[in-house]
Amino acid sequence: MSNELIQDILDWIGDKPKTRTKEINFGALPNATMKSMAHGLTPTQYGNFVRAWGTAVETNGNRLNIPYAAVTASNAVNILLTPTEIQITTGINRTTTTATVYIEYRD
Image 1 (tube, helix red, strand yellow):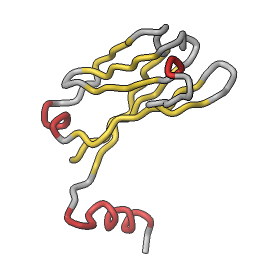
Image 2 (cartoon, one colour):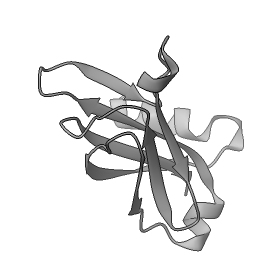
Image 3 (cartoon, helix red, strand yellow):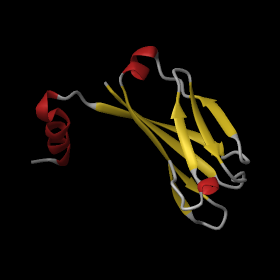
């Protein structure tokens, strides 16, 4: 059985529709504030939203997941999806950290 066929079977288990993932280059994270960027989802795609997450790379090569929960609350990175944009909030200066955001929605 091919990998493609296996993935198609997994996508349709339980009569669940396939999901699509949109990748967005979010650029530099903000300096202890919120930064927003249009996500470009249609109202239908937004209505079928499943989840949003991201990855970020610091200049020293460290990588972190978004959202990022930290022992010290100010180090956390939060993500919010509105009908028109992605909002990422940081508690400290992360302007040298670049992020990619992924939005998953049902097809």
